[in-house]
Amino acid sequence: MASSLTKGSAGTAGEKTFFGHPRGMATLFMTEMWERFSWYGMRAILTLYLTAAVLDGPLEEREALAASIYGVYNAVVYMAAMPGGWVADRLWGARKSVLVGGIVIALGHFTLALPSDATFFVGLLLIAVGTGLLKPNISAMVGGLYEGQPSARRDAGFTLFYMAINIGGMVAPLVVGYLGESVNWHLGFGVAGVGMTFAVIQYVLGARHLGDVGKEPAKPASPEEKRSMLRKVALWTGLAVVALLADVVLGTYHIDHIVNLLAVLGIVVPILYFVTMFRSPELASEDRPKIKAFAWFFSTAVLFWLIYDQSGSLLTLFADQKTDRMILGWEFPASWYQSVNPAMVIVLAPIFAALWVMLAKRNREPSTPMKFALAMLLIGGSFALMGLAGAAAANSSTGKVTVFWLLGVYLVQTIGEMCLSPVGLSVSTKLAPKLFVGQIMGLWFLATATGNALNGWVTKLNAPLGDAVYYTMLAIIAAAAGVAFMVAGKKIRALMGDVK
Ligand code: GLN
Image 1 (cartoon, rainbow, N blue to C red):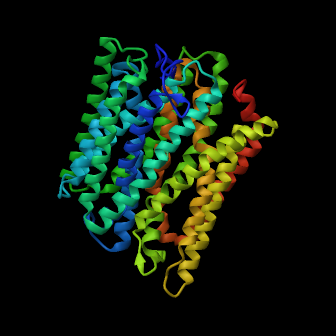
Image 2 (cartoon, protein in one colour):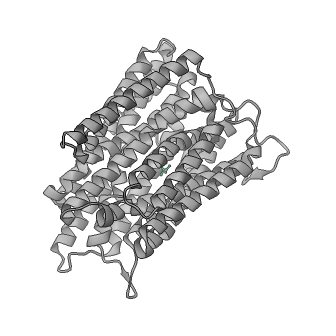
Image 3 (cartoon, protein in one colour):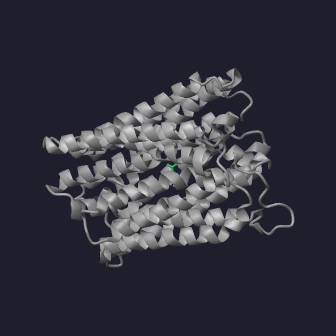
């Protein structure tokens, strides 16, 4: 995708720059900042809103169900990145896909703002479709702005972009979380919609700085390919709707059916994708080991995001009920914890970018497999801390622990994120053979989808196992994955060939 985005060159000599980067970066920076504001704002209150206002039953059951829905929803949104990438590559080009995606997301948030629980799931669906169109393609457009430029400059561009993501992600829970939790849920969702509207306006106004990036689809689909895709989409959507209706009519429907289906899809879709890529006659034999190396990174990323993304579900519920949130006699909203990680990213991203450069100069920069191994040890370590926090809460007379536990957990997670997320984005583009850049990028986001899809099952173990056992168990699994990655590091580096 990224490889074919630029026909002309954006940010050419003489044009104004954005912190030394192509001027088009300002447009993408601001658009992604507001888009992430709306996404993370909505996510900050989703579990709490579902538990408090939508679901019925005893608190423990509502919480477990809310955490499942949250996991499933994240999975659907990130899975939508695959078809979203296809639409850009084959139909509309990235530029138009991002625009349409942005408008659909804004409509989704405004639907959530309606004071009705009945339309709620329609709003979520719109946000998923829109994000699928926007997220992978705006990331690819960032790559397009740096076409033909040195790889270090591209990395710096992605670090800047990662900061935009996290500025939006930091401010959103403070504003949307406060309004949603303390004033009215739907007002919170509405404000997320206003943020997304800013993103669209900004994108339209700044489009002139993007040169030709993303204007055309990389490989336009023939009319026959379009018809065939339409038939497939109609067939599978039809089957899904019929199955759902039959389930409802028979009176057997349960949310678990969707949770289970997605968890299975989360595993099957990437496997099918890897197999299809391997079988493709267009994949040159020297590129095959690189795809194998990517499969290692993919599987580890699945486990990383599986643990990491529980911060919006189980950890938010822990913040809500088992953390003392009083400051000078005022209790701050639980959703505010969602700002902690992005704030830490904003501080740490440039430090880590500089650290890698400094270590590289001394020839001591850890290899990408080593960074991934470190990320796994760190994310495991964060859940080991959570296990201790859970035990401390259970043993405390108030049932609550101090704010420092979660702050510590998030700090360790964020350091892990620095070793995996920007690194993963960049290694994906480097390992991808030219013809598969879009698909590899989609697969990178699919790792998040799979992690979240499995969370539909995994988070259910929290209540029966109790906090201490549950978090410690995941910590051990992550640490084992980290050690396995270290042991396999040499083999993975060999598969990567000339990619560093
Ligand atoms: N926090 C990052 C973002 O919002 C990473 C998300 C992911 O890849 N799971 O883009």
